Image (cartoon, rainbow, N blue to C red; front, side):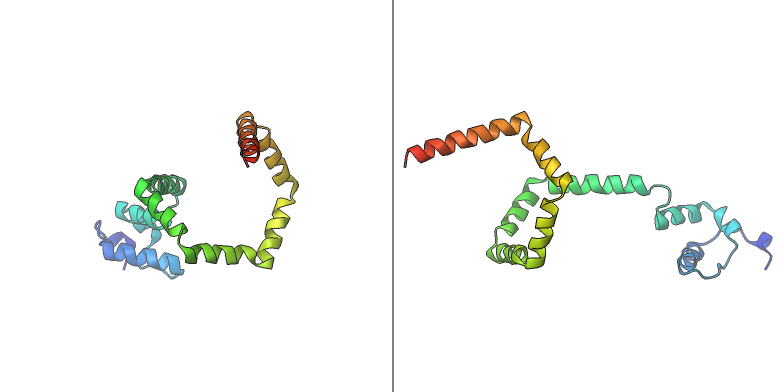
Length: 144
């Protein structure tokens, strides 16, 4: 079959079949030059491989997920799930494992982590919050 004899209309079945063949590394049923001339193939290619719009798509997905997570009913559902005794026990058990404790301790000792904490503690709003906390704690100790 001569590539020049190929009709202008390529069915979607042929397009999808060739996309699958590209993924698998098999030989195409039609030359790539002919397939690229067909707009449906280009759309299917972009949709399949997200070559051109990968960053844009990931930003959109992240925004949708963030919006979904901010809904009050979703927050309440998540909060309720986290308060279940079996979930709390599972998390506590995980944190108590020696390898996890060692990993956390190692992370806390890193210089960049220490610098980040120090920078956070120097913020005026955090200093004010700490002062308020210690004042309230001192008042509570005096009332005992």
